[in-house]
Length: 178
Image (cartoon, rainbow, N blue to C red; front, side, top):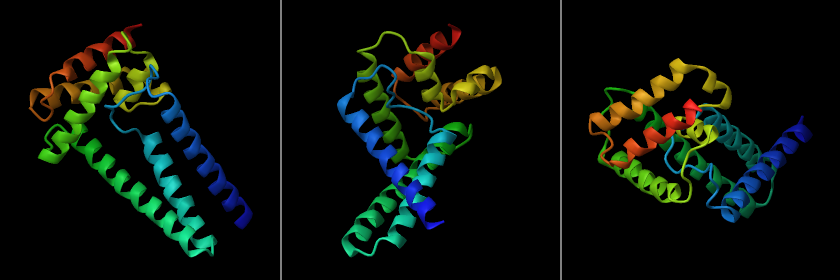
């Protein structure tokens, strides 16, 4: 069992390094999104990473390696909790969004605006990522409409004040019509 857990730890570590290298080497990929609703798949990967890195902490005897892995777990845990909170606030129609969350949303939308200068239209994959949906969820119009309505509602209620959100919604609708 120890060998299997160690293998999963190494696979997770390799996957994380691969994603990091891909982000660094190709920052302007057309399917990259800075503003998105966190997806279930993202949370599964984060919790799985936290679990297996935690296992690595228990298995390695070196203090400095354990300390480094502990810091990584702490960072991932804080990131996961923040993303979970943002997802709940964005998808809940009556959520009270704090000033900090509004700043995070506005900053992400500004980054998305810069990314969109390089691409004219969204792909279905990018539209799904922004809506926080998997590819198989694109066959469920009710779920797509619910997520689009949540974004539109956040704009109407002033939870997100950046006007570029309307453009993002328009691009998503165009991508999903094709």
